Length: 251
Image 1 (cartoon, helix red, strand yellow):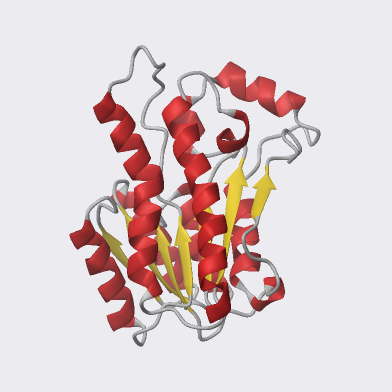
Image 2 (tube, rainbow, N blue to C red):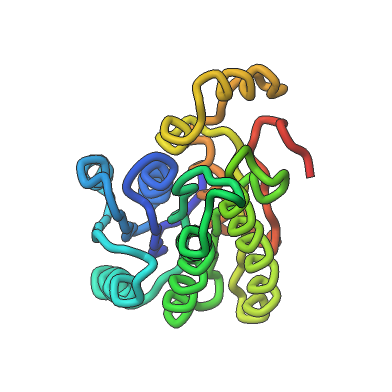
């Protein structure tokens, strides 16, 4: 669908769920893929094998994207493996961590959620930009929660994801003159372990039933959107946040 031959893609959180499908999709389109994972080594290993079995070029590295040393190791691994450049960066790392109201959360919890969802985007992007030139594409992950405040106990998460939206717009202005595009994807209810962990089944059923398309989204559908934004087919799109939520929220 999209020609990514000769491109090098770095995907944080690229071992499972949405990230795993992104890694597979970019490799299918011809990109050499370097992905990071933190937990879930079995799923990361499966993603690695799936790409290799499809004759894709791929390397994987475990690491914590809140730590500068692990970020540097990932970027260096990618450069050393695939010719010293990074053409595509996809910042998937992030999470809700837990549902806590204002009365329940303390400053340490707030700081950790903001670091996981927003600071990691800044740190990884800063490191990767050193090796990205004209034609580069950065794709960040926000959330529908950034638009509507999220569900109960998601204040820290929705705030940090709102920061990703603003970061995307500001960076797009800064690096646009260099020929680098920066966009953002804001998923709604996607069928992943995120919602298996943090969203009650009855809530998922209610959301799916109220969605115009009457279902949850699938990780592969998000991966298709990433492939489009990574490719030259989207060459005049930058600073955008694309909602992928089946119609549950309109900007």
